[in-house]
Length: 520
Ligand code: SAH
Image 1 (spheres, rainbow, N blue to C red):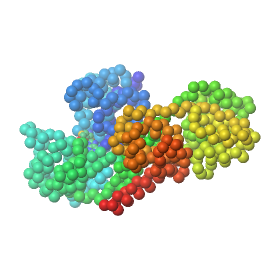
Image 2: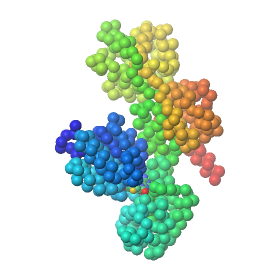
Image 3: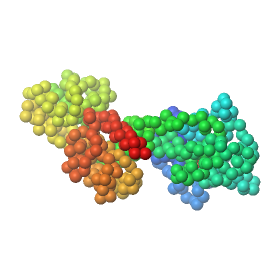
Image 4: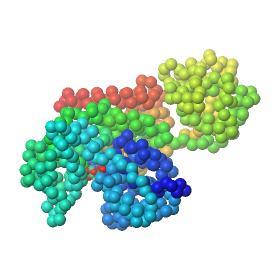
């Protein structure tokens, strides 16, 4: 139930598409929403930031033939709010700029439902920032006009004064105007706007998929056609557009425009997706494995109880998942980290060590390089000789720890989580792979590689063979798993970390760009 003093509906601006441009307030209300009703133009990626238990509904799915789905949106908002749910109405850009947010607020007032409005970064502001151009300029533009290009300029009763707009002393940001571009241009020129006025079109501003056309007012339609830009896009007209730099700061990012598939479980993908986005890439997420509770916690519980009896000299972790799952179980049994007492802790690499930090624990041992179970096993051999060693692990994976260490120590390996294949070959992502829309596939463990590659069909296999899809792995082990299935990875991380894998991706993408620049 809502606190009665809290508003029930949040009319929220999602910004132009890059999740980094969500406001803090938008994140707060998304994270606690029960229902999220979003516009089709809001990228799916933004929904990653909503409460995972929230019901998410695209307005397209509402009944009615009208593309705007009114009045069904109003009804839906009011009904859910009255049920005591926290409703977020998510709109692209800002809700009050060509977003009909005003009408929704009015309908809520009429229905007696309280609301809050959360502004968002509107397309014109994002376009200017990501194109690297000013919207106002002391010498070139003293005003900005947000204009709808949706109304036919020649329509009787048309509310826009194109003569005034042609003489406007600043930048025109024309929304929803691509379909009527020739008419808009003609109208502006008819009333005296110079054909040489700098003009631009920008599509998906703020995302790695952003595309732009820079031209003049007179040449804009031809440039657009030549570049193949379609709706929706934003048109900018004015001398300030001429003040842009050749290549924006965003277009200069090392992975700008590269489409990269992330294949790890969703709850472990967030940091990698964000990092790729910040590098200018377009990340896609398709989890290929899922983490679940093991069928039987018996052996884990017995091992946990043994902390208080025989004790453990060492505990080994080979993944962040292993760490979190082990402690979840420990806490679920009403115990706490003191049980570990003087038990020494070994971690396979920096990410696993970081996971331990969440419990205020510092590993006694992390291998210097080559973060794999094999390296850990070899390095630990003399340290754990003759000791009692606990190894919380996944249900599958190479048994190298057990092979190496059970000869020298009393080793108890217990399954704290199951990793199961979870690929949906019918997903949109597989379609995108088949169509050749995704260039890079990152494979961050051998199990992930196996799960992903066994689900690929011949079309995808052929694309990989022809070098149209590149596989990049996190380690030698993962590359070996790829080869065992008859594929070849084009690159492999130097260290077994996500960051190292991303560095390989950057190197590869840069090599390609240089090669294509040499050709042209
Ligand atoms: N409320 C939104 C505008 C909705 S109207 C806002 O404040 O931005 C839809 C129009 O917005 C599109 O036709 C396009 O002109 C523009 N638009 C929205 N997001 C955009 C983006 N990321 N890049 C370029 N144009 C965008």
